[in-house]
Length: 123
Image (cartoon, rainbow, N blue to C red):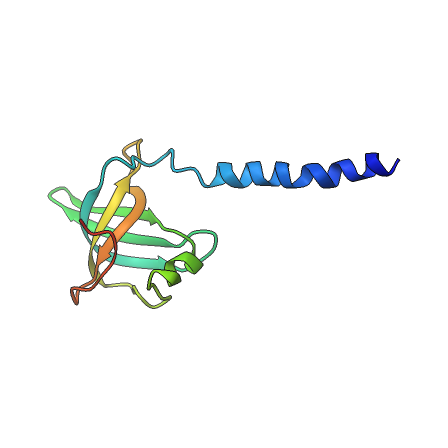
């Protein structure tokens, strides 16, 4: 009887771990490509499980709204980021692994701030 009661407790980490791994897939991003965007930050969301940069990119056809997914705030802080690293109106150059479906979004690779400092990969 005790073994029967222990079975759900033994299986829980396996079931939870599987869903956590599925959540952190990069399959939707083309990690083999990196594009560069000259952008103006419209919003910087410092939140779990992923921070986000929302930015406007001016093209010949007008302004495109982009959403860039980042790592967790904890991991970003270890890489030198702060909640105040970006603010609306900041002009930045973003390095992004684009979405495979062609939508205006991607996975953050790096940023060059207006003062010339960089965070992440910028080459």
